[in-house]
Length: 110
Length: 444
Image 1 (cartoon, rainbow over the protein chains, first blue to last red):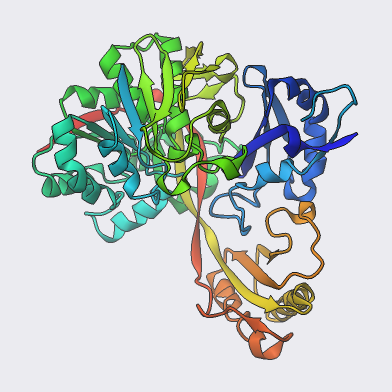
Image 2 (cartoon, each protein chain N blue to C red):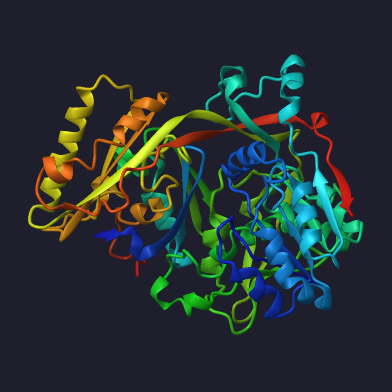
């Protein structure tokens, strides 16, 4: 069944120059494996579409039950150059949480 | 155990934050982080106009306001309020609070040394794009190295009540008192890494205590009185993140995790001037209400080079808005956007980019935004950027005429033409350590 990422995870995002990073954190340690399987760098890149022009890298933090996504060329030049309302990627975390993931019937997801 | 609280996450944070921190519970050190990436260039411009300026002007009056309390409670202050002029900042603090001893940490400003660096073969390539800095040499406005915590600890050794720095690593503000109090050395890698991790958690003030936290945000207690974060640091590297009793917000593993991941790259290599911390080794545990314990952090030796942030003139920009009401608010705003672009294209102007957003429809999340049937109003927001100032000036004249010339119900133009703003961009680069010599001065 399809589930919104916001049901199993929370997130915070911010910037470094033209790079936006999203920390994605399992709401319960039991959901971490699900995040690792479903929320790949490729899927995040395609989810963000035109918002992110560059590469998306994923880093795993099993100790925090979290993933870190580093998204390049994600802020129209970033900082002072960007013409976007969200020039610092502050809302990218919330945007990632709208993604739908596939959960097996016997998997924990609430 | 020492208590270190951060009362300012950027220049513009809540003015009462540091006051509540020093008055509301035990505190030994108050840190204040004023400098965002682009702040230095703004301060550089201020100093060009007036050699007595170029620092965070909120800081001296704050110290005057809390001076009695910090003297009575023996709280020491460490702040990067110095910007590009720490000495002038220190003198103003001394003028407003003559009873306090003030030390400054100098040496982060390498603006005058750039040509020497280039001559010695350093290219100061942009860490993001790989371009050599020679491409923008004539446009550079400021250049500052991120100093580490050891010079700040040296400044504490002078007995200063207030330590003022220019650019330094944000988390170094918290690490410095630990180095000073516990006698940590450069090869105490795990201890330094523990201090850096705790410092990173509190460097954005209330982002550690429930502010801007998505986890079950509606249940966050009392945002209006949100407590600013405090580290209880121990010499063995154990850190507890907490806040003063009776304040709003909350400290949970959720709030701490969100902040740990904030603005980081590869978590295995969190680079600072003093140590590289491995965030995959961080262990969190609950330690009572509003208390989260950090342990187990591992560090590896500091990077060979120091990071510098250079700011340079990039061009000009302006952003203007108009509001359209229902019915057909979105459609009207789209027609208005096309109209502005048509008119601009017929004026032989020069733009690097024109960017349109429809606030209330999809400005932040683009295609990911939920589709609304009929928004009550939509704000059209058009931005333009160019190396040519005149093109941007002309652009700022093209929005308001739509009130009379374009689709109906345009309003919300009360502030008139948008302002033309200089774009000062940020250039991260690496600098050899031997090109940087931090030093401490006590300001009489």
